[in-house]
Amino acid sequence: MARLLSPISSLLPDLFKKPSLMTDPESPLIYSGSMLQFSEVHMLPVRKKEIARKGRRGEVLYAAFGSYAVLNSLMVLPPENSYQFLWTPTRDCVVWIGSVSYRDAIDDLISVFDSTGFGAARVSQGHIQAIATLGDMVGLVGSGSLRSELPTYKVSSKPLTISGDVILADALQLMFKGRIRRLFFDDDPSRFVSDRSILDLLFSPFMLKVARDSPAKWLDLRVGQIPKRVATDVPSGASLMEAASLLNPQSDDCLLTDNGRVVTRWDIVVKSWKKDLRVAPTPRSLVSIVPERSGDFD
Image 1 (cartoon, rainbow, N blue to C red):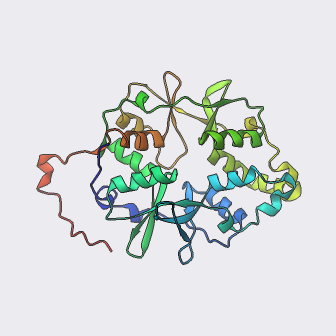
Image 2: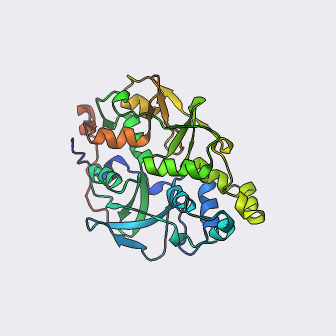
Image 3: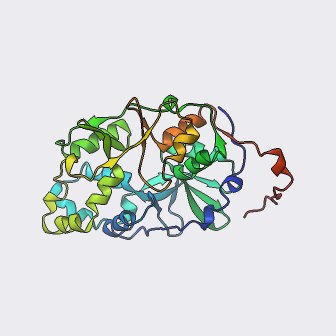
């Protein structure tokens, strides 16, 4: 495994300039879910004096709100309690993401993704925090700042396909059992639904009205009723830089190779990190004009 020793600050200098959204632990899910549904972010940090706990290895984990936690809760929710569930405090429906310092290495950041299983981590610079995601790392691969010699097919995986007639509860069981975010369709292999598209539908104004007026019908859906998304085509022999450049960092898209295999942000970043992902060398002609950093970011 190659070590990516360059600090996060050197490769993501604008991280703290990105618009950031947060939610409150006491806010009901109907508010936090709607905020997520109307934004392009995949996860909302949960604010208020540090909601944190220790991980299995002693690391500090922080609460965040995202589709994973909501959908996990839905699998055991009695349908008649749907509207009541929407008023549950956000703190009762969170996941735990890792944290790093802005001075830590890119290697540390990707290691946190790998250990928690979530493609987001909190990055701290003194008393200021930001969220770094797999989308940020994919942007670095696409720009050539991070390099790998692996062809796309080396990190691809076989898609899990499903019939559009399958009920939502069964589809969620498949997703969580396989630890995947996307299900493709038997009769239309380029189209898929994801955890995010399911959340977007459930927290849409129309479906929230259904939850209020007919709670038992809120989850009475078949997969074919969920808006489908289309995977972007990529040659199986394309470089990871070429593949990464096809992905929008803020969307929920993925790639489909010409032999029908799926490539996600996780594949491009974490799988290549375990093999040969490295920081691209600075061209000699630029060395003399790269400003030195003081190293004091706190």
